[in-house]
Image (cartoon, rainbow, N blue to C red; front, side, top):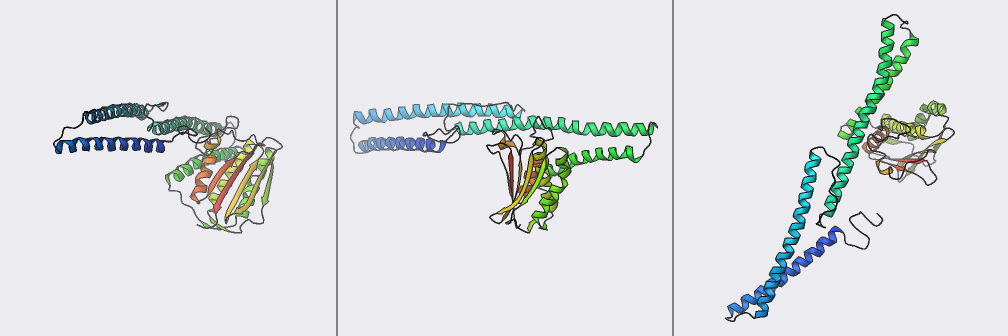
Length: 345
């Protein structure tokens, strides 16, 4: 919603202002009550009976305060009860739980955040299950090929020569790559990923990544270009292996989503003493509602497949370098990936 989160309406009061307004009303009520009681006590101490209007005023203030307090407590208690019931259901594994609207306005922001949390939990759980299915599928195919070929060799159906063994080695590489992706992501998320930093030339890193994916781009009929800016720094402090892995994941994603005859461009430049890597493709782009989640784990495209780990790994590796990564979808289509890596540690 334009103008702020859904619980803050344009021209209205946010939770902080509503709280301060409520606190002011409560303070005014207390001041009036104390003043009325002081007047009554002063009259009694002076030996005079308090005026009837004072007694009526104090009684009215007390009754109004009790009614207001009971109303506020009832609304707050009901809202807290709804939150507690919802929390119990989430703890039991029901991530479809939503609290929705609650009677207490000050607790509206808390319930909105709770609903956003459960929505994210539900999404992550669905993606986790999809990942398990995808990983099982990705591992099952090479295992079946390896098993079938080995059984054929053992049964004497065909010889164990290089022509038969080479495809088996390729299948093991597929499994190894998938398992290494899972390992890298788990280490990065656990904060135990170690970077082997050294002085590297970012231009050379980009050149090697582009050349490594040249044949892949040619097979997909995609033109792969490298543009090195004059302002590109000659050296930065980074892990060359991990930095190459970041560009590899971005290039894999860009080529996979680019149609035949399209172009993928890699640019190297600088901004505020940081090195900037940019990868542009001519694909369909990322739907606007998916942009905030593009670097999440297990996010995949239905038409291109994959395990949904590449961009998640790239984000963790960039952050391990102290940098940032962002995805931009221009109005004209395509996807623009921008990576910024600090020049120093």
